[in-house]
Structure formats: structure tokens, C-alpha cells
Amino acid sequence: MSDEQPPPSGDDLLAPAGYDLVDVRYIEVNGSYAGHGLLRTHGRRECSGPNCPIHNPSEHPLADAPLLWREDGGFMERLCPHGVGHPDVDRLAHTMRTQGESATRRIARHACDGCCL
Ligand SMILES: [Zn+2]
Ligand SMILES: [Zn+2]
Ligand SMILES: [Zn+2]
Image 1: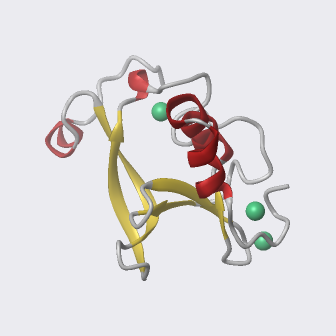
Image 2: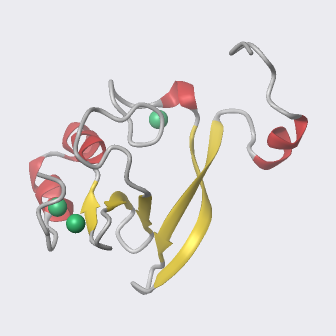
Image 3: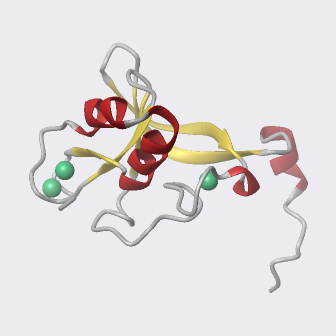
């Protein structure tokens, strides 16, 4: 097994070069939970910083928790075992780099049950 194996050709049809398809749970624009779906994200080589929720999570309490894509807000959360969505810290770092502190504070606000601390 080597990392140099080309991906199965089916992947090329689903994900054009430069993109990855990630299995996420997602919340629709209207705020309702829509179950699993495939989200088209930036490719592995296009991460915007040292850590990325999808390709290279930092060490945080919810690094292994399922991803929850908030279509209503356009950001990524982690779903803790109790069904609470917590903004992904690597995503917050990205927002801080690109949009600054007030935008970060806006998406960081959530009803926390303590799992992301
Ligand atoms: Zn990435
Ligand atoms: Zn929890
Ligand atoms: Zn939290």
C-alpha cells in the first residue's frame, strides 16, 4: 500500500481536480437538519492554513467528531456525541485569518454543552 496509488477513476468523475468530496452531516439554509450529504470542498493542496477541519485537524477535543456543515451560515461545525454542533476550531482560525474578529465571534457563538472546551 503506497500513497502514490492513483485514486479510482470514479473519483475523477465526482470530484474535479482541486476539489474533494467530504461526507458531512448538514443543516439546510432554512435551518433544518438534512442528514448526510457530500460536500464539495477545496482540495487537499488548497488548505488555507496549517490546519484544516477536513484535511488536517489540529488536536482539539472534537477532532474526531462528525463534521456538520451549516449551509445556513456557511461554516463548519463538529457534532458532539450529544447532538450539539460546535464551531470547528480550525474553521474559526480560518475565519479569523480571512474575515477578522467580529465575524469569528459571530460564528463562534453557540449553545455549548462543554464538549469543545
Ligand atoms: Zn483542507
Ligand atoms: Zn456534547
Ligand atoms: Zn462548544
